[in-house]
Length: 292
Image (tube, rainbow, N blue to C red):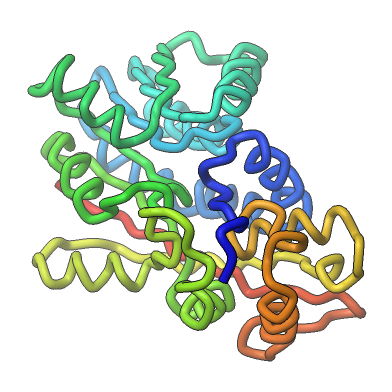
């Protein structure tokens, strides 16, 4: 054990750098965009039926590409609706990139954006103080619940903001994917904060079932090419190891025996597959759609 290992989520600059590499080497965005194009329109149409205005909260907006795909589908199914979007993102570089992407996107005349550089917990307090009675129609939490101290409490609060036909979309890693298996073994050694970064969709489904909350579920198969992690000194591989372990500069701050053990485990067939010489990490996601 060593105190030099630090949580990646608390280092926005490093996180932003690893996030860019993750997007380059992962099929996640393509898979999520396919879900948004093929499955989400019906969900949005149900949430917006008969409405002249439609309010959205995006928690963890990132650089905005996913938000704009959601908005594009929303405009297609509800072309005459006025849309209000609360964009919530704690990282200043990501939020600035998001603003830039939005400013360059045409056909957003009916959309109004409010920018909130804050965490989900800070935004919850901000909402309670500013407009506690206001309801919204669609909220999405895409790959962000790992970064809150109380995931169940966060879901409970934001679900309480939904209008009668409103929908809450949660996307997390599957409880059966390689990432989940890795964290089930090494989670205690990886954890360097109060955040529950071993959280999976399986945890949330158990909570929802216990509470009697109805939800729909969609499986989103994704892979992360981690081949470069096994090349000593490879800079991209080092950033990818940060992503996998959620630790800053894991390659140089982890005890050698822990690093060797993690790299060995990542080769296991329940974590990865090899295709044409590339090592593909199973990062399958699940999308959960909750009603009010």
